[in-house]
Length: 403
Image 1 (cartoon, rainbow, N blue to C red):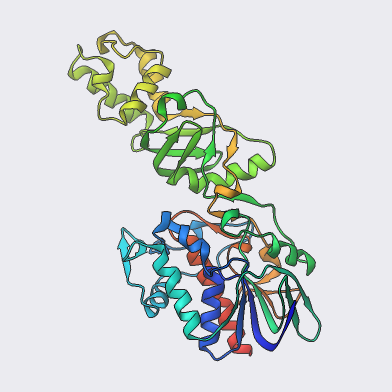
Image 2 (cartoon, rainbow, N blue to C red):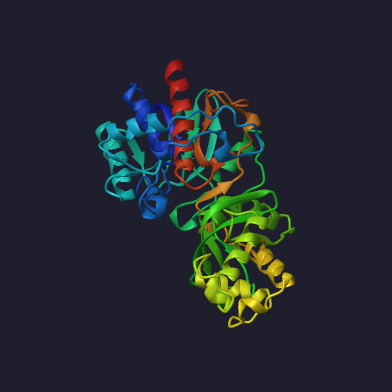
């Protein structure tokens, strides 16, 4: 183990998006900064964001897009600041219906730009350094399995438990506990769910629009059915609730509304009009265009109607069954696909222990937390990278003002 003789103004644990943003902002202000990162490259998890395209922010911003056990009214709309920050690094944004991506459509572009700026600023980066402890006397001591680093302040930006192959870590939670801060329950979020429901035998490979509901949470969008479960935007957005219920062993079924753009009564009227239009049509022909073909076949089967049944033969009970299964299709769940397949961790360091204007620990002056390690997680759409930027910006502003 080598001893680094420098006394840094700030040592940042974790060189993910939040840690890199913080390091750049601090170094630009003239502070002596270092990064300690367990991976052999900085920003490794950035490469997997947005399916490799890096959806880094969204023009629809606000506390309603985030989850936490704490009040989130402190969350500001900083998406334009983030766009400007990345522009300074050479990233030209592409606005896709309010979802912002780099014009290259490559997450690597964002990672490389951050790394280039880190190098240009001459920031010390200790790669392949797994931090094992943080202690404080007159200054902080950050111990890795290779180095001992000294700093006046420390920021934990080490992420959560998601995506173990990309360098997830429990370290931030352990340090919070060490300094007598609370950590909430942790669950995988933005993740697909596992199911052995018999309907998946017929629906596997289907992509269909719908409203997915679990308990009191719901979201609409394209649902992806697989032989072993369900994923897609709406499933991932509410998966945190499934993750917590799985943890507490109280899972319930997921419900899908395939015709979410109509009420039950409106759908019933729609079916009556379709069936009246051609009373000699088979039910599958009459329902064509209402939803995905395989979804229609499955709903008809669940309603106990043969696909070649002529619509003039249907009675009111058949009509009610069709409406029910189109609007309230239930699928049993086994749980989520776990932390390794999740994009973010729900839960984290309790915000009650954080000064929310500065991201500083209330229990330990000079110790900061930013990004995923905190009890804040967003839905799909660039919200989690925006939170990483927002929390890093708050910490940077406070540290620069003080130092």
